[in-house]
Amino acid sequence: GAGVSQSPSNKVTEKGKDVELRCDPISGHTALYWYRQSLGQGLEFLIYFQGNSAPDKSGLPSDRFSAERTGGSVSTLTIQRTQQEDSAVYLCASSTRTVNQPQHFGDGTRLSIL
Amino acid sequence: QKEVEQNSGPLSVPEGAIASLNCTYSDRGSQSFFWYRQYSGKSPELIMSIYSNGDKEDGRFTAQLNKASQYVSLLIRDSQPSDSATYLCAVSGLDYGGSQGNLIFGKGTKLSVKP
Image (cartoon, rainbow over all chains, first blue to last red):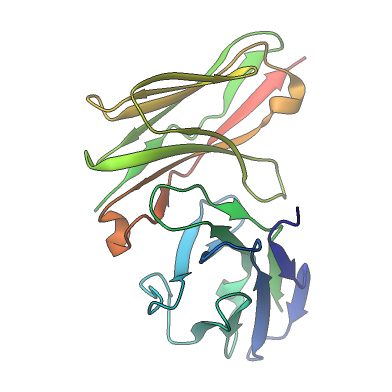
């Protein structure tokens, strides 16, 4: 079946602009996660959604970052007033539920801030 | 602070050898353990899950879990150059990161299999 879909695959933008990254999880997966991975670094947790519960935003690095999930499916990660340090690959993952289940990753969005 | 530790490597093994990748975790309450493979420029791909003490085999891969020692490992038999990648250990359990069930990832071990 279809995996986690992310768009765009690449995004280049100027410093100070806002960007939106989209994630469409695997059908039926109720949990959705966003991570950031800078070049040569590990995964940095950003935010996760589980069903209709309030999202866990504990990993968001600043108030320029926000995310929403509409209808329990598609999610959008928004970065306002982008900075060069925001350049990274943004990965989305989904799972059937949060406890004890593996996460399945999309191909990511490579974000470059000029 | 809950942590998952891996040797960053690089771990270099000759083709056909057994590659042994190790991971330790800090929280005794951890319940689920996963190994992901990440090729350069690609996203992580799940290769093994293990939930109980002992060994779990899947093809050339064997995951080993020892909860008493808080240790999980991945063995790759008959290593191939195509196995060259970074291997991420991930651990899930109550109270990790304040988010029930959220995975905590190690920083990964880079494996290089030489022909």
